[in-house]
Image (cartoon, rainbow, N blue to C red; front, side, top):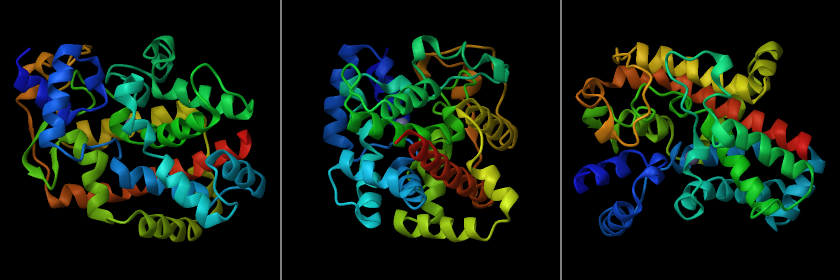
Amino acid sequence: MHFTQVFVTFLRYPERAIRLRMRSLAALLLTCCLLWPSPAYSWWENGHRTVARVAAANLTPAARVRLARILSVPDSPAAIADALAVASTWADETKNETHTGEWHYIDLTLQDSKSDISKRCEENNCVSARIRLFAAQLSGHKTEGRWSELDALRFLVHFVGDVHQPLHAISDADLGGNCERLDPPSGNAKSLHALWDGQIIEAMDANDHDLAESLGKYYSALDEARQKEFSSGEVDDWVWESHKLAQENIYGKLHIPVEPVLFPKNCGEAPPEITNFHAAVDTLYIDTMKPVVRDQLLKAGLRLARILNESL
Ligand SMILES: [Zn+2]
């Protein structure tokens, strides 16, 4: 693989970059450190921190006590919210050294149905299996293998966020929208995946405190049935919900060609219909998608709170 190709793939798709050959990876990491001081994360930092803050605002007193102990902070709502927000991006920051990049997503193809979820999650190497495993570890109050309770919490907070990013639950031989370029770029986003990871959130509100607060107000104004819907479901329901949202609002609305069932290791191996596709993303598209992102962030926070309240 040509070095430039490897480098571009890494920039576009940090989560799947773990699959790249180690020699190429070492070389490009060195270059990245020199040229790219702030890597793009899933939901970027703001999205994950917002999800953590929404969850922190919906905890039971018992869950708060245990979280304060695990996070080594005072048992006060503000201290827990801040610590959980910091903890929410750890899984992205450490995924190259922990070799856990595959845990952040699930490659469900456009041809798959909900019953294919387990087939696309070999050896529990996908986001939905990891949410279940780390929630179980926390409810058992134990260290499991190499992961401490704090690690389990940090993974859980992050992965519940990731599973609500629609492009973390879909694959069209395009590494979850990483191989479709934006032309021109949208802010810092040069790929469709980056647009959904962070750019739409940036366009909503660049501050996680304010965004979490406005999500809380929006939630309080909803009727009871809708409020219930926002925190409902099990992990596979959330995967499928994200998958359907991506099909409709991303692959459908932007008219991305449907590819055969293929799982390229990097964008250099993706079909030309994908790598030559230039998504036409304008302000109208971003504005139309803001409510989808708002609802996904809110659902992620409320559902995370539900898991923590049940597990801790
Ligand atoms: Zn992630």
